[in-house]
Length: 292
Length: 174
Image 1 (spheres, each protein chain N blue to C red):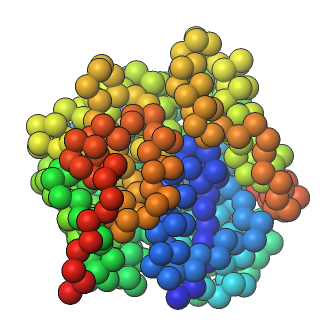
Image 2 (image 1 turned 135 degrees about the horizontal axis):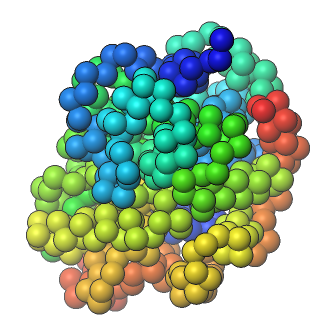
């Protein structure tokens, strides 16, 4: 199976371990990610804060590239995913907007590209039974809360993915890896997202609440699917006793026994290795599990 | 006749503000309302009351995190996040000082880098933000250094042929 792949700007910077683990895990599963040639930034929060046209035209150029490639477009970053879906939605429902954006982005919209978050591809195309079959090192004993943040699930009419109140896709994947996913009510609360640099105080409060609630639920760590969430969770937690946070793709790589996994932990601002070591999930050779 | 703020917001956002019956769900769910002066519900009312100066100079429109919680829970399907975007766009178009100076600075620097390179480049953007913002320069220096040591702040931007196209998009979008 081949996909068009839009890594997004954070793939080679703050979200480095997300892209590394995504690419390694997909390779392992036999899925090919073909990076869109010469993709551009989606404009993120800044574009839609300052210019309506720009905020739709920047993603539209990428949609044009994906149309030419004629494959489903897979996007790991929640913010990029949200902006692409927003541009697609705007052009699909309003012809006047479509013409304006087509002119600004120099493309012709066909509406034929399926824009998909990474989680959807894993759950739908790979499927949970196949995820489970690939597990050589079950993540037994690891207790997690799944944290989605905002942009993967809201606004629901635009992003059309999972349940915006109590999302289920990521918990199901991580359970298939052998980890325990605990129920909590804050999976889609906001971490403060884009105000992280300008108002760190607000983000520290929001992230602090998330960490408190996660601890109350009994979690050792978060599992996340958004680069911005992950950055805020790692950078804005206060105090000594910080909860680590994993990308779900890292946990897939770990459970699949990929040797690359050890390179990802060192990229974290909150080192998850003490936790993984305490559970016997790194260090010793992978246990082999009989394939069903 | 001068265009009303209500009119301008409705045309930019595509949202009908008259549908709001002030149930306060938006405000109840807003993650940053504690730091705002008015909150989303009052902002909607103030638009229809044409309290232009108070809104467009407020910090509220710049604090909105764009999380879409309000838009998701509005019983009348008003996309309040889109209304906040429209208010920011109008404030900038009128050249008003932003109620959160650093927020506007951040957006301008981010887009400035994207306009030149086609993609974002953290090192350039963060460096400029540190120099120009009111956030004390020592803040986040340790996190910045730790990110750098983990190979997460590449010094050189990626070279891509998208830059020329993106410059055209910026030109055509204003």
